[in-house]
Image 1 (cartoon, rainbow, N blue to C red):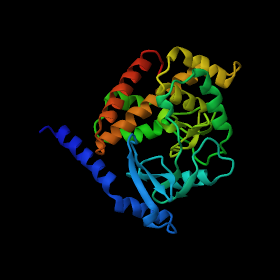
Image 2 (cartoon, rainbow, N blue to C red):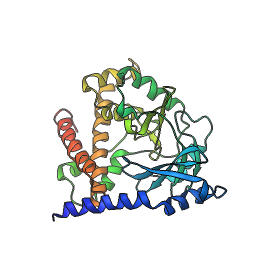
Image 3 (cartoon, one colour):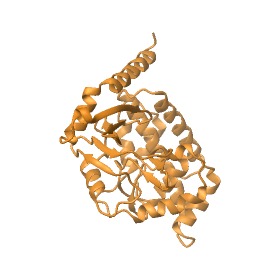
Image 4 (cartoon, one colour):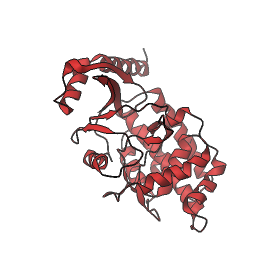
Length: 296
């Protein structure tokens, strides 16, 4: 049997074991909510799709919740910062967190009904007001998010494509403007609630960054036409903003560099899934296309 098949079976078995290890799930919940009783917990159900975390829906006395269990420590994830964010007043577009362990990142949040943004038809005109409102509701963040530095750290593992390593090694991320950003603003991290409000999940990479990075991330995640991206960025920054097209190009490069390096590091560390391999293929292709049009 090929080694790749062995890894695939092992991964499937890991998920099957996690799904059915009700005792471990119950311990996670009660560690965060010791006043709850195990007898009141029911209907644990694995939620597929998470790359870095395992997520489970469950009920406590009829109320639905989601349990998030991170799989391993990863660079650029600051659990104390994430915990402080969820506790801060005036939070916008985020789920209601019931309990959070800042040492492990294990979290219980209230269930939100509604589809993922990735599963609905999105009007591109909705992107700019959403990202603007999201940024406007965030307080100043104590750390910078540098996608290029993160990429270099992840590319140090294994044997990535040499051209991508050289590209990252010679590029300093120095945005002209920064604001608190989500930095992983993709349509799988957004739920369209029953009220129509977009609720944003997974604030693990919160940090100061070029605000265009979030707009580009969401646009690329939705696979929208690149022809409208400059127009959206001009609307986002204002017609008087300078170097808008260059900023879009920089953020496109940084986004796909981050996507490639993250998937490469996951694969090297044993997270061998079809989705991870596909992300490596797509991001490598996207970078080749960008290099053909940019000065980087």
